[in-house]
Length: 480
Image (spheres, one colour):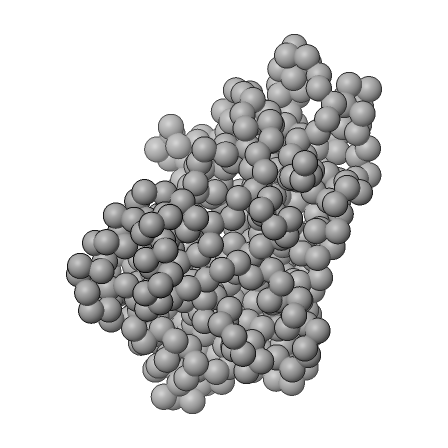
């Protein structure tokens, strides 16, 4: 059978598993592998109040090393692709033109993008912190891309610690598990993201300026973010301020020379950990803040164009024949990117829509949304497509269809809220990437660690913050 991303072969008894789970929960508390507790109303607004250990897999998931190498090799290629596509404003506007008719959120983003195009606004210093997510498809024995995230990619802080936890447990219980901690690859995502943010700050070269992290008013994943704040300060001497979009609107201004000032502090890098969902824009104030920051000379991570490159519709457009060639020259690199593309279709394709109505289990219907919990699966695909066809017009343009990927399920022990339970699970691998460019000079283009998420196989969605999955790490095997 195909070796899946699955848990380890060593099978300790129930008492040993419970002991390991208690050790793991204590270790999480001692090492900052924590999230806000939803049961405590202050946990999302007051740091240090209402903490629980992050939901975790007790042991790492298996992945053949060849697929790991493939995913790592793709990271700089996707980084470069995002940058190239971001510079083609007409491609972004044209590709999303139908989507904007039926999706107000995408329309508002495109309005800001169009204003920047009309003003001929150039982003000389461009910073991207990305994550490309993959699953191992058991039908084709290939690693297929789920999506490419260009805004607010989460968990670089916490995922870096999960690898340490798993190595610790393997070293402590090695006689029970028959595992080698060296086969869990190290994970420097948080340090490397901080390094990229600091380097962008450095390129801007204003000593008294700060990095501004845009956050949601209630953020139970704030400790993941605070790891970046810590490394920026301790390793690079850079100060970070945290602001919501509404606070930026109230406290922010752009000076005549383009400098962004928020609460009388100069901001040279804006790092978005919010702003990716319509919920982040409850009023015009938030949209005003987004436009204000875009109009400034500060480095935006992401800029409005980088943000749009991460939409599902652009992912689907890039998968069309001959489109990658518009942005990349190297045929070998283009082939490597295409190899990981799953089937992606516009809902203009009547044959594919008909096929999806007849066989809904083979497809996923995706709207232009990030953050988990938005995709449509199974019989709901059929119902949604029939409804959208009846609505007619451009209603279909708000979605794309994607080939459903079928990873091999395996047993794993999951620990959430101090309770350990065994379940059939599947996993998703995300590879972080950092890209920094100043005019013609590429300063950083590299992979930056990884995020492993494992979920119960009966769950369609995979977001950890949304409550669907647990944090995991990798155990590399020789088997293919």
